[in-house]
Image (cartoon, rainbow over the protein chains, first blue to last red):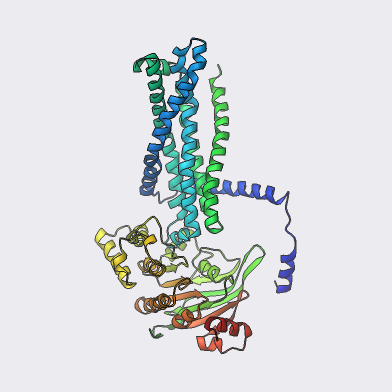
Length: 271
Length: 257
């Protein structure tokens, strides 16, 4: 192609199927789909990077414990405190353990864990990978004959997928403890009685569904953070944007997934 | 340090690029590049910012795919070989990045150990330590072994970046703007280091730069990239003896004549 025809081509206005923004949205959805597909393809190919998975799991799981402990305990106390007046009006405060357990196990624990992890871990992954991208560290890894996608992305997504369900169980336990502290201080209910009342009203389906939700949330947090970080452009400004978008997009998807999973679980619950 | 060209073997091409084209959308960056690099030779690719110099070496390292043309590195076409073959080839290519690209979350020791641990799994702890110490000694920074990249100066980061590539004993070195952002004294030290690497390890190199002092000090041959093609090739003196106004202005701006 000669220079004249090239400059002519450069002057042609860019054509869109819809508008620039709508086209960009669908392009982004498509590339995100490709990214997820690449993850699943890479997942089953060696090397398996066990050491890095353990390191990331420690970083994501263990280092999130203080925040999860605090928020879990407070969530239990606050939810119980706020529910008491309404039940008290009907003379039904004895139902508090059941109500609190259902709320925590079915909704609060997975959702709050997901949102907190999205904020803490999602932003961290987005910023870390984004920073590595703009400072050419990912390219450096590639020229060192290391597959950066396997080493950085697959390990982090697996770590979040494994750790979020465990953090959810831990948060549920802490929230129940918080709820028990509040119930005990008001009604002098014993721990055994609280647990019996609470667990009498939930089924294994509730626990399974929360566990499955947490696995989905964990995967979402990891894959969104990695996608945003791995595809960062435009220098340090891009790093900030990647961190921010990782959190916003992960939280948005978590709510969408919550609605879908609850709907599916309710079909199973129907007699 | 005075430049010696005694190791160049003109019968053996380590890099051979033929009719290479690369575009990004409507931006046609490389428009028919031809270049041969011989065993033990330092070739400097000169050009203004944004002319596609870094794109060229990223294609050589297999980080970018060419639109057309062939890029043979150590007798393998980087655009056609499988990912596994490319990984094996990359073990023989050292890439020194403009930003040094040291892993921020690792110490200097861990940065240097990383490529070894990934690719030579049967090495003992003693062998690893020895290899790291040798590489650091080669760049004159043995004392930084337990430091973090954030604690190093720009020149030290460049040297550690080069040490990280040397640890794999590459046959080819690719330097992307090795003196960018450095003061003249540190730049001179980096130029000396590039020559020392060439002599000591008998590497062939492509040095991407717009710094004529670096080009003159390190290059056995220069190739000037203008408008996506090589406008002129030859020794420093041959290139700048040209009547081409674009080359003259490049020289004038660098040396403020």
